[in-house]
Length: 292
Image 1: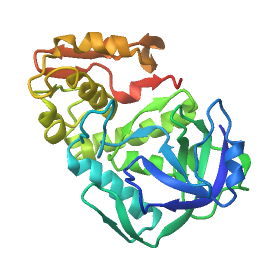
Image 2: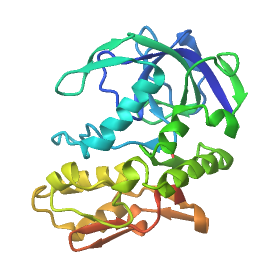
Image 3: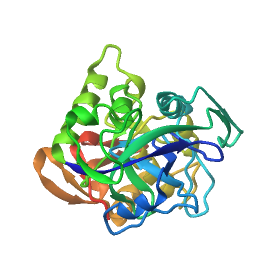
């Protein structure tokens, strides 16, 4: 799979980085102009931009939409993924304020490289994150195979069981299969690794309000975000979930079910709601979302 290689450095101070987002600055900021696709990477004058790590989704440490109060998923696994990223990149100490903003880091930056095929609608660069010696010349397209993928944090965090696989159509099937193999090993480990020992996505999460989503249930972050948005349309502390399937239908997420090769619109097609319990009927690694 061809991807653009960009060499640069990772930055934490002043950000609220979590397990699947971080700031990156190319050594040559003009290389952002080489990123393919319909969306431009948004960056400041120095070239610093926000990355969205490809193919993974870690538990939300801060989520808000439409002016609603900021919420989070259970802290344990969200913070574990966040700390795993900073440690893996080589930051030895990170200090944060109460709202999770990084106020100091040692060292202040870390060198590394990314592999990308484009930016999202929100103008974050979608990337595989690497460290150490770059696997080619910065600013050029290189071939990414399973061996190179295994050197990235994206693969590492799935292998450690600290992220959910969340695939989009920009990722080729051979790389997706390699990531799924890492996920399966984490799920089948004894004991299960990371979040998998607490995961409620398929077994069903009992949702009694915003507090239960923040403190009790561990579910796919995409499902968490949809639930939060829905709950804030009514009483978030005494929710009526009977309308949630219709809400998912209106959201109209487009995706493929890999195991059936079936194109689908609306997460309601893979989500069951029984009283206060919400569950997905397909595992996250069986879905490929269409990036619009």
